[in-house]
Image (cartoon, rainbow, N blue to C red; front, side):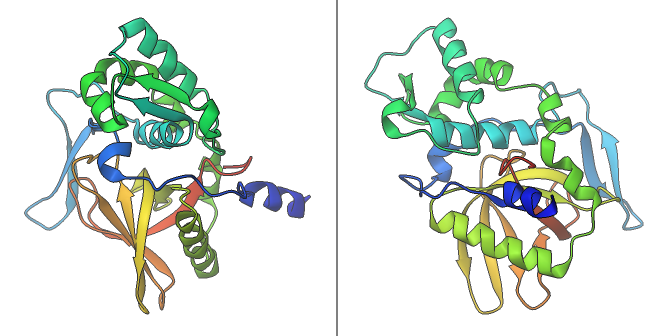
Length: 252
């Protein structure tokens, strides 16, 4: 039973994607907003306060990362066609987000999005419709792989994960990963990895962070420590994170 489940969890499509994920075109122009504002207080403690006014698009980092992967795998943009109406775009978006992020459609079966050259351009022009149709916060709360975060992450687990992520990227399969510290939950977040560079000491993964769509983030793997780290930003104090891939296999 354990062997069968492991195989199910780690299975991946054998074929490579037809092209690389490009940050400037394959990401959303809008951000997943945060309920809280984070900062260091006068005593050096990492604290948070409720954001005012209350943002209206929150708890969707998994939703946005998943949808970016679905558009990459199952949609094709055609700027040569005229811009369509809201009803058409709602139907097409629903069709895209109903596809599996765990496999890729062949070129001839990809869903055509008319009037725009890329997801970045499309989401800038049709933000309201995309936010409404890509899914609510429940998709973040009930992502099927969340069970994994409660189990310990060994250094061997993380070493293997780093190798698997590199292999995915070499085959143009951008993985969505869960960044977490449990049980503290100083971070509980999803990003999409789209490129990497490596040295003898580390692997630097370029990431699309749904919270910060303006620039790419970096997730770093230290080979000697067999540990991932994520830098300080406006919602995380920086430091070690545990990493595992989601939207992969039947258990994640």
